Length: 473
Image 1 (tube, one colour):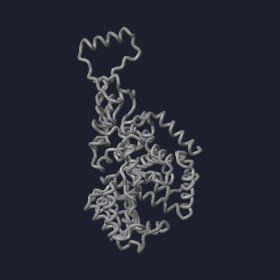
Image 2 (cartoon, helix red, strand yellow):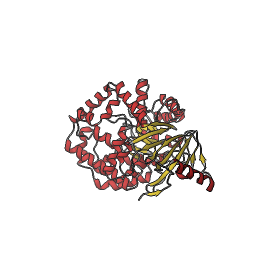
Image 3 (spheres, one colour):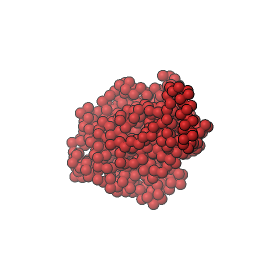
Image 4 (cartoon, helix red, strand yellow):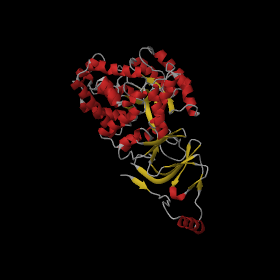
């Protein structure tokens, strides 16, 4: 059920000038003048989707939202306030204002990337209304990038930085794990990125030290650790639904060695879907967040499209370097040579069943795509991911929550962003159609505001066109 709050805006339309003047005189003489709201920019007449609570959609119609100094300064019914003469006005009658989206498993530019490519990548997020990114492959250069964005010197989303990967190839002893945890905490990373290959002993040393110094850890679940142990140790996020399939296998039937890509068929023969409620309960009890990155996994590991087909289906690849797209196409084709279509269909269906069960069971879920990865283009991938979640049974509003307010809950920052509320960061997405009615409407942009900077859709499209030309498309 949608709760609607209305406030009709005064609108003369095509009225004879004398009648209009008389109306103004009567308004002034018969009542107090309306309060004047001041600021840098105002969205006038807009319908606000505040995303402020879990009780279902709230819709505030005919509102004036004023932004000052990169924050939301006021929200009032349009017919109850006047906008100051120095305020830039965005006429937004019939449009919808919602919080900017967050990409909770994104990858950020590294020093190996050319400066032009780095700027293009950051813009692709912003162009699609992604105003926050949790980077999941850290590098010290990203601290400078984060600070430049925060100061408004570089156009890009707000960044939360994961550490360099903690994986078995480089973290081989408990002592080394503990040392790196201290180093990454002191350096200022927001998260320890957990990757594959860690032994149980090394993982436990990392987890214990991280809990001691107060830095969260999340990402993959190493096979030697297992889902239940990672949850018990306090892993804050499980990305890619990693190890959920393995956790469906009873202990007595677990394979002697971690299953590789070619072994997934054998694993599917021993999974017990009846264990799904146990996984849901353990995830919820641990208060661990799930970032499933469904579309990428279905493209890279369990898809049935060739590289050429994927290139056609994802026209947004024209905004990526051509050599990158060629690598993606080859990777997809290579996967098809070692895959079994029926097994892949079963895995896809089971992963979707698990995600739906996690959602229905109240486990916290966050929106993420692992972009840029194989045919997962920053920003654009969010639309594919959201559409799939609706297909498996989530409502558009529930999906939008996972990329807005729930993200703020994850960061314990509900007083700072994730909703359209007074005092919050001015990270906003203005749409020409209601995304609560159809998730596809998230792509129907009138413009994006990031860090208080307004970028109208025409400017977005011009920049995207220049990026495509830059890459020869």
